[in-house]
Image (cartoon, rainbow, N blue to C red; front, top):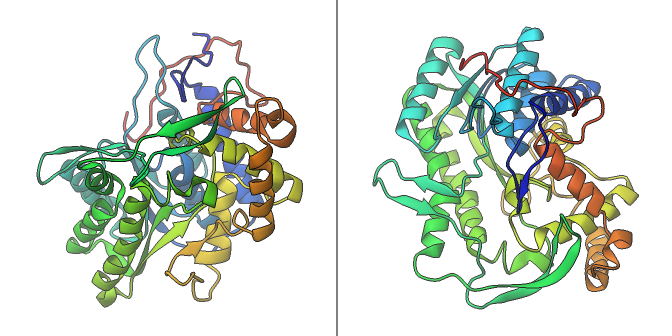
Length: 396
C-alpha cells in the first residue's frame, strides 16, 4: 500500500515501516559514531519501542554491545492497516541487532501485568541468566492494577485552581489561550498509581526474588521537571505528584538492593517531541521556542543524543554517578541553563500566531512529530508501494 500520514489531533493514525527503519538506522549510526561505552552487557528495557526507552535500547546495544530484552505494548499490522510505529521500530531494531551479532528479543504485552513480568523472567532465565541494567520507561495513560483488578486512568490537570496559558496547535501554527480545570476526586491518586513508582518497584522485586539482578545492578527510570511556564500543569500538577512518587521510589528500590550493591536512579531528561508530550497543552509551544534557542546555541539534542550522553557522561565514566541535591541524574542540564530559560521566558511573552514562525521552531517540532511515525526521512520513497505487514523476528 501507499502509506501517507493521517492525523487526528496529536496522534498520527498511520506509520511507515521503511521510515521507522530509517529512523532506527540513523540512531544506530549516531551511537556508533560516538564510540564504544564500557557499560552494561545484559539490559532489560521496559517501555522499549519509542522515545527514551527505544534510545536506551539502541545505546545499550550499539554503544555497549549489550544483549537486550525489550518489553512494550504495540499494535501489529493487519492487512491494509499499518502497525503502530513502536512495532516497526522494534522490528527494525531486532533486525539491525541480529545483523551486528547482538542478542535481542522482545515481548509485546501489558508491562503492568503479572503475565508479562513472568514471561520476561522466563526469558532472562533461559537466555541471559541475569541482567546488569533495568531501564524503566513506560508512558501509558492507563494501568490495570495486577492485584486489585482496578483500571486506573491518569489525568493531566493542575491542582487547586484552573490553569490558563498559551498553547499552539502545531499542525496549523495557531497560538491561543487554553484553560484546564483543576483535578478532582481521585485524579491525583489514579495518576500516581499509573505513572508513579509502584510498578517499577514491582518489576525490581520480581526480578530480585528470582535472582535475576546481577551484583551491582543498576535500574533507571525517567522523569521531567521543566520550566516555570509549564509548572502549574506539569510539575506542580497531577503528573508532578506521580513524578514525585517515582523519584521517592528510587530510594526505596536502592534500599532493597543493598545486599547486591545495586542502585536505582531517576534521570531527569530534556523536553522532547514524543507522543506523550504532544498531548500536553503548553508543551508544544514551549518546545518550539526551546528548540530555536538550543539549535542556535548548538546544544540541541533528540532522544538518542540524550541517552548516548546519559550513558557516556553520567552512568559509565568510571567515576561516581553525579546527582543533584535530590539524588537525581540531570541530563536536562542544557535545557535548564539560566541563559536558555531566560530567553525562552522572553520569547514566551512575544509568542503569537504571527510571530511564532520567526521566533520559534515550529517546523522542527512538526518534523520531529512526523519522524515519530516514520515520515519525513531522507532516502525513503514515500510514493513506493510498501508492505505494511512486518514481523518482529523474536515475536513472529
